[in-house]
Image (cartoon, rainbow, N blue to C red; front, side, top):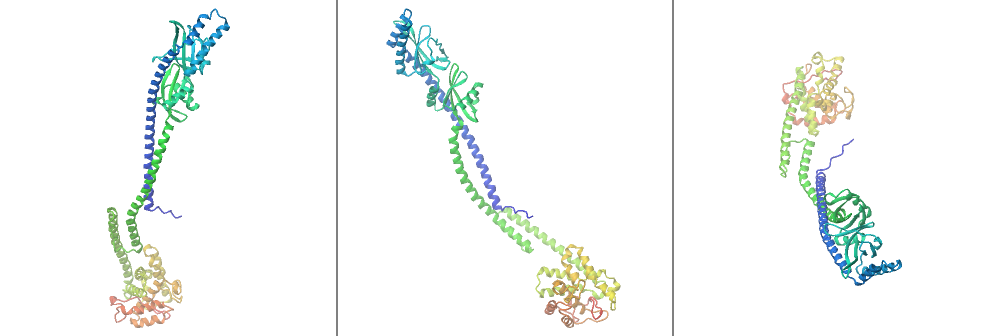
Length: 571
């Protein structure tokens, strides 16, 4: 299974930059959100503090105004007359007359209620019992009920009734310096009152009386949840959470068992600033992502372009294995140039090591060839000459350099298998018997077995193993035909035969190169490859030969011996 390719440098840089921008923007947004929330919380609590001070002052003013108002109303002459009549005549009068007198007082109270629109306006006797009451909530002041107001530390009076708490003010009703009763005005701390406070403070109002919600301008479920928490104690830091929403709560004032709170939702107050902040951050984010993408692509391309050029140069160098020219410096960054210098230095070391290895490799092959040739004075220099002739033929056939190198070293080793042939057969001065010739024919297979045990000699194996195959299929060891035989093996076969013919034997003198070529042409296409024979003939003018047709460099040396068995020579 192919491993997926890693992303390109440009993609990695762009992704990394965008991720970093996203992380930074996320951190900025979280920071902005926390800052906005804290600012809104502070603003809400400050607003509640200001509202508390304002409403407290307003309540004090209202209390004074109620006191002044009730004192003025207590001077109403008609009310005084009606109350005086009731006080002076109630005992001798009958029940019907008392009811009529009380109805007269109630009518006067209704007139006063129409003028000041109170929740309750009432008259009590000297014992504090209610004689008559008027107003929206007059029914909550039952007749003959004794009203017992309470005064707090600020001088504010209030009355706790079964239906709730009332803000209270009273004034004596006197006639000719005689106290004939008391006029009372009360304002209920109810939903209407809460709505008035909300309109003044801009925050919700919650009234808790007798440990329960008596009035609220917020959702009843929220009001009840806040009330439960307030009953446990005052909120820490003026904030509490109800139904997973944070609220700021401020006690405005308390009247006995009734407490009035200003309530504001921090979440609702935060929503608009958060939306504005989010829009601003999104706008910045879009711009940042665009700028980051453009900038990262530009930077990545600026950095990756010289890296790509360096990579291409390295790939071309390694594929062509041409290490003669160092990779040029980019001149873009110091790091890349240092990397290029290090690579060039490394390649110079590799080339030197490769040259030393190749020299040792060739030296070993030459030593093997010389060791083989040294076994018989008639074959001295044969492997070197066959190698030189083979390379000359390969050049004439325009083989590539890598094949010429394989040909050169393979030809040096072509007879390596003769190491396994006994000296008695190999150095026999006369013709070989059929059995001895068959032993000689085993040397390609022996050479193949030797080369298979050495991995770096594998490219030369076909030459060693097949250089005695013939185009007509009469060769050995596999009787291959024509193109079944590798071209390098065919070339070495021709060069081997040419050197054998032009070298002296114990049983015959060396023949000239012209005779050798005629012999090769005679058997071209059957025993020898015609193309290789033609290339050898074409290469002859460039090959310096001695008078006997051998290579000048090897003059004075003899080659491998030929023996005639059934009309053929052995090489």
